[in-house]
Length: 241
Image (cartoon, rainbow, N blue to C red; front, side, top):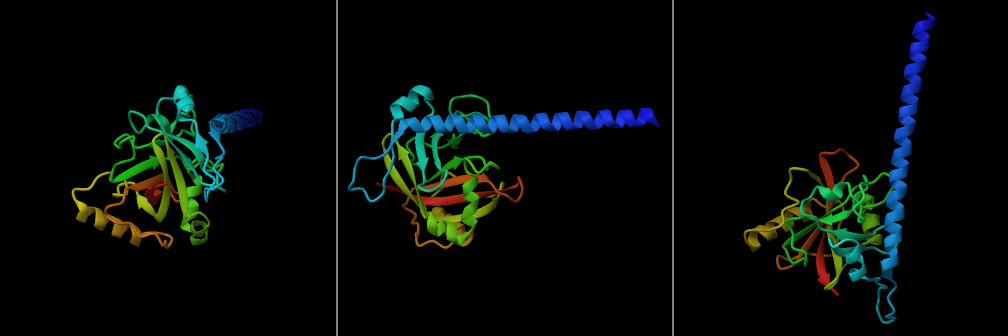
């Protein structure tokens, strides 16, 4: 009857309006994130050293520290969206939904595991970031499931206040959230060697870089495109530049 039709139309209208509002809010958050990180690029300058094989950006960590004292590094990979600050919070929750400037946002910020040392001296350093649908943050990590993408981007650069590193990537793989990819320390060199061997065997790409038990390792971690229980991790060796 007419009453039922009017009720149904009203319900559908409410659903439509609510869905539209949700889309608007997601778009607004995404734009805020893009604007925030785009503005931070003002703190990053082109290198003036013409003798360098790779043009590495120069990062004004002092100025970034005035904005957020949690800054520990800058992650950069030429030809990709990876050009972001890395922070370290008191826990591994805050920066899941806060931007570098502290504003609440679903994009979050790339952050170093709170268990790690700020000077990147641990056996395995872990950096987390979201797999954003708009391709930002750590979304590009999942592209390393293709050999061709690895061959185009076999390394990334980690710039810190105390020095710069080139990260030679040697493995990337899908890992259940209960796996041991996020182990930050090992009991001895044998345990570390076994862990490295296992990681390489699970890799979705083949690399010429062979890690040793003496190397400092860094693991980049993000959600996979499969489901929330499986993440994609990208592992590399830290080499001082």
